[in-house]
Image (spheres, one colour):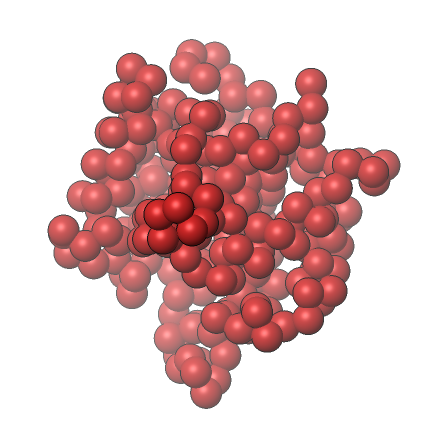
Length: 228
């Protein structure tokens, strides 16, 4: 997907937690927005007391709004399910929240976390989002892709969970700076190199994924479904 426009149409990016969408698809979001597409971000969970400090939760949500402003996100939707507790939340509840969202937005493309990610919230978000995207509905997304999240996708156990083997690459050469700037808005989440959640590491991954397809920078995805 080098030159020309990415034909994703109206796009919904589903993030288990704030910053997953920037780590996994920030450059793609920026590119789509720059090309005039409507991009929505749904953040599935929020940190709730006593496990999470309300001030910290408010801070990261404010950081997400700034980051999404940098990328050109049309609307940020907060589903407010309990962070790190999706496995204790009724599966029907998670399904219903995402189904309502997909029904309301009618996205042509949905970007999801990868099912093999180490964090259970990521796995359950992937499964419930796929339920919401089932093709027997009147309207359903024609393109479903899974993104990679540094510090989650690569920490799964080899051979015990599905490996992330990308087969779709989006050229983000002109939008890498927007992605990195958006990540810098997450001051509470960014770490110093060589930590994975550092700006340098994020740039290195984009360079590697780009080199795979002879581009300066890219984001990599696993194709889940594409109806042509």
